[in-house]
Length: 438
Image 1 (cartoon, rainbow, N blue to C red):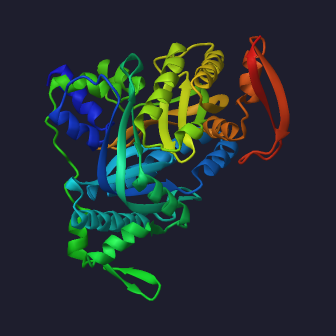
Image 2: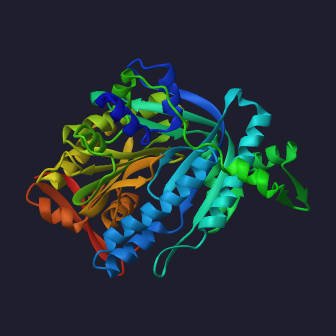
C-alpha cells in the first residue's frame, strides 16, 4: 500500500461519513465556507455526570487521570459499536457526548420515520446494554438519550491556514438536545415530531397519554441493529489534503511518522474555553455569522500555535475548546500564549460586534484517542478542562485559575476575584480576571 493510501485509511476513522461521502464525489480543495442541509433522525447521547466523576476519581486516586482515560475509552468503545452497527453516522464527539445522524435522502417522510425507528431501537439497545455499566470497581456509567427528526445544517467554516472546522446546527440538533435533557439516566426520550412520525407510519400507537413503540421480534430487531458497519470509501489520493484539514495535527504527525493513529498522553496543558454570542446571532443557521467568528478565532489561536479541539453552536452562541501545549506544538510558555491569544480574540471580536466570555486553566490532562477501529476522536479530559469551562460560565471577560495566574503574573495585569464555590470543588476557589499586558 502506498504511503498516501495508508494515511487515507488511517484518517477515515476520524472523519464523519457525511464528509467522506462528499469526498467520494468531489476532491476539489475547499476555498470558501459552505453549508449543506440534510433531513435526518438525530441522536444526542450524553454520559451522565461524567465531569463530576472525573473530579472525584482524579482527587481520590493517585493515577486518577489515567483511570478516567481508561473508563472513557472503554465506555465509548461500547457505545460506538452499538451505534455503528445500527448504521448511525457519528458526526461529532463533544467531550462526553455523541451526536449521531441517520441521513435521509430527498427528505422522504416515510424514510425519515424508518430512520427515527432505527435510531429509537438503537437508543433502547444502548440503554439495555450500557445502563449502570461497570467500568471499574465501584464505578458505573449511564447515558441519557434524546432523539429527534428534522433538518440539520452541516457547516464547513474557518479556512485560516487551510484548517476547516465541521459543525452541526439546526432544528434536529436543538430538539434532540432538549429531549436528552428531559431524559433520566437509562431513558430514551423522543421529540414531538419524532413521535408523530412513528405514529403516522405505524411504528407505534398511543395508549391514553403515552406512546407505545412497536418493538419487532428478535430476528427483525437484530437485523436492524446489526447492519454492515464497514463502509468502503472510494477515495483517491486527491482527497488526502482535504482530509488533513479536519484531523488534529497530533494524529496527522503520528501517521506521517509511520505509526498508527492510536495516541495517548498525559500532558500539562493550558485550556482556553471560549463562548461567543450577541444579538446578531439570533439566526444561528446563517453561515456567514459562524464563519466570521470561526476565522477570527482561528487566526488568533494559530498565531500563538494553539490548537482548536472542539467547536459547536447552540442557542446561546458559539463555543470553542482550545488548548496550548498539545503535540506537536508544545512550548515552555503555553500559559502565556493562551492569555495572549485570549486578549487578541477579545479585541478582534469586539471590533466586529461580538461579545466573548473566556475561561483559562492549566494542569495535567489526558490527551488522546477514544473510540475503536471504525470511529475515533482525539480529545482531552481532566479537571483543568472542566474548570476552564466553569470559569468561562462565570466570566465577565477573561478569567483564569490560580495556576495560570502564578505562571504569568509578571507578564500581565490581573484583578483577583472573590473566591467562590465551583461544581466539583469542596472549598472556595480563587480566580483572576485578565486585564491586559503588564
